[in-house]
Image 1 (spheres, rainbow, N blue to C red):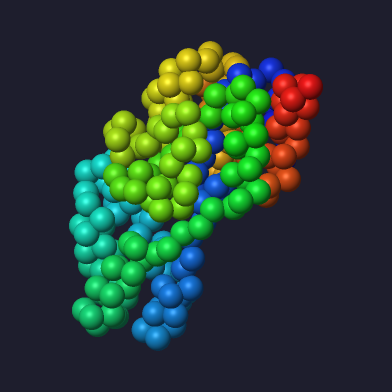
Image 2: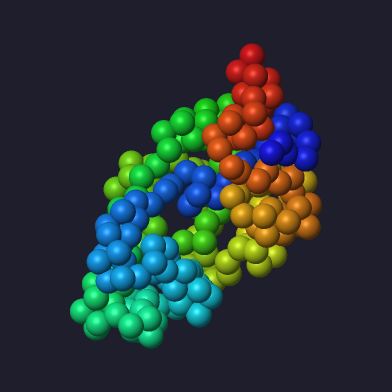
Length: 214
């Protein structure tokens, strides 16, 4: 999907992290689910249910408390305590990886003079994760929901992101893989790009990179 307007009008790129730059490997979680007679994806649905997910993303609970909450809900699905605790622990520590093509595009956009802000519903240990992935220096700024106390699509997080970028909202391109977050960005006056694959971002940034690279 293409953005609302020409990328040459943007001075800041506000980019989601998970689902755009970073992805997770749930293969071990899926193996444990099958072994426990649980449908694949059930643990993810429990973990990301608002009553478990939102306190984590607002910085109100630790990774350990999150894993315990997941395990508690899994018990209601007929798992043994050992199975539930193991699944909760493994899900809360799944390995992740980054898309090198997307990272390259973001680095090129930043090198071309576009302020890059990662705007993410994330955990309090995000900085350690980014360092482990080798992208601690990827962005000019990071707006992390667990540190600012508001999460997408709350309108306040978009205001914070524009302020960090020091750019008016109408000069921001907001990239995210969730429609509700794009809708909220547009309501704040930003241009929104619903991300589905690297080609979406490449197309959106092509005019910017062409113009600013000469």
